[in-house]
Image 1 (cartoon, rainbow, N blue to C red):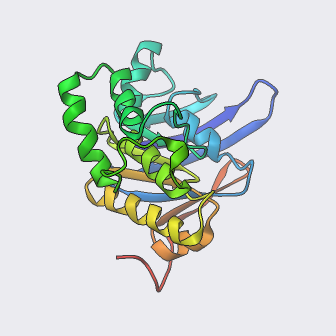
Image 2 (cartoon, rainbow, N blue to C red; image 1 turned 120 degrees about the horizontal axis):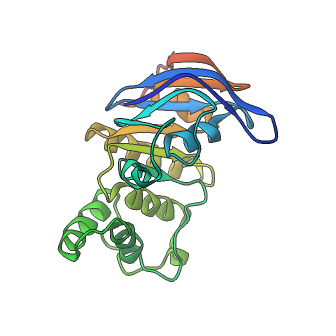
Length: 228
């Protein structure tokens, strides 16, 4: 579960990124986080992953209290939260298999676990036939699927996707969103940060709208075309 209670975040320069955000995302939910540039979305992601601490208020993520988390606990928090970055952050000199396996090695997984888990996750995202390719030999949609596989491989309870369709055409964008919905159907909490209003409307999920560091709307998106 992700819970923000009256969260204020003021940066050292003195600007307030968040001005009292309260929201709760339950285990197994699928939510969109929307808002204009500079509204506070990136700050929310950094608070969830422990990159930042709140100036005041409380942030609870998957059993951890972020306002008083110890430095040595942050790696354990991050094992529960997989992040799909907007710029993918893939390692070009590594193959598809090696990119995903590397994410497991970083947290100390055994080779036996890696050999079992990586093919399963690559099959889940439809890349089982591309294991020996390098990222620069793949399309943008395939690279995004690889980024999702890497975020999934350590079996986090939560996935955060930061503008996952920002560099993709409409067809590939829909495929990536459908994949995230499939992952959610398997029980993983999914939070998608996006500017793609058409996808938000199409999928008809809960939408948390942020503007000027405040939650200005929180509820189901009404849509006649909600994906099943």
